Length: 446
Image (cartoon, rainbow, N blue to C red; front, side, top):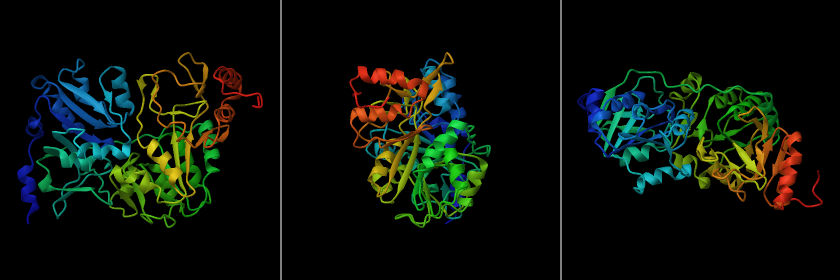
């Protein structure tokens, strides 16, 4: 069959494609670096024709024009499954809302009809000889919302790497209603944050928990990047990868010979992930590379699947931890900063994994708005702050001052252990608060 004829029949100008969106529709954008700025801009131009269009994105790397063009939100209402910097700023200006979820459950929200989608906007490779397009570097919920959408519009981009996977990474021409030829813009790159001396010290403490044959999941941020750099320079052997996000650190570890995947129990020899964000080096590494396997998030983040790999070491950052061991990674008070993402999934899975370890790593302090030193180890969380990992799920907490085990510990033992992870200049105040909260006993060490 000549699939190119069908493709050419469905290829239309972008202005024509976005005309299918009607007032009241739910429009699902892509995910992470696969969000289409081209389709977004075309839809925003229809602002005066449309009302009450609900848009869903996942960590859109740019501020969508549909939000910027409509400050009163009469025409478009933007929502995001997991905030990045763009969504955070829009939320601060009342232009974006968060959608809570346990990440591995996300596809089922679409399959169950709990999350509605009328029109799906995706970005993809040109079709191959068999009529399939590849969805590139983000796959988490895309197969689900594409399958449930009434209309699918695909921007074709020759810059999209062809990411090989386990399932769902391709879509056939027959399942796409309209194609538009985009400007072939490069996939957005994620600039790695600078690594501080504190990040390095935290990473050194994390490294004490990693041994030969462990299977890794690294979260996002400078500290996980520091861990990756240290692993690349270490003599660790035969590490595996089963992660949510693939970043440049994994390429460095692989090229240094630290990652082989041969000790994994499932997907042996494969670097499993559900989305990638990083530099062009990462995207070039993934293009047609069979060492990496991209899967939907209901596979990569399902604790029952993750935990089939022994010695899962899951390393995630957070905003704050209180003296009870509650982990806040999403908000500071009512200000939405990030999302739950896969943190709960992987911390749970690490506990279920034979020999696994779930690590919450954070710097002990930050500078407040007045420039004063403030503790990330808090007596209690500020009202409105969302708990991402409950105290009964949390296993290890790590700062630049050491490692603390939470499991099996009383409230007073947790308080002492966590205060020992706080900055020395701030510990006395934390002890006073612990005493007020009745989680400090006479035998605790000062």
